[in-house]
Image (cartoon, rainbow, N blue to C red; front, top):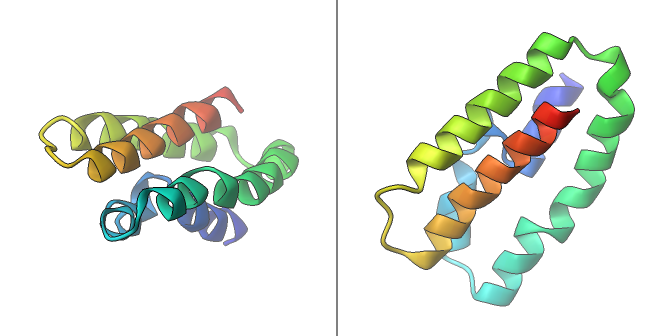
Length: 98
């Protein structure tokens, strides 16, 4: 349950649907804060919880995020949505490294 909440907060793939639409409606400075600083604390918690979590779950979340972020950004024409999908993909790669 804790991993699901943290995945929602940082925008990992199964619960990433809010991120592109929210970033599309914000100005660039606020979008920068949501894409970077807001994700530091939840990611630090995931790093601390990683030894106690099933590695298959983290790998699945990471792969799904990398794939969704990569494929979602392909047909976008709006800069903020491209940045949102890039953020989803990069968080996926960071979770895979865990």
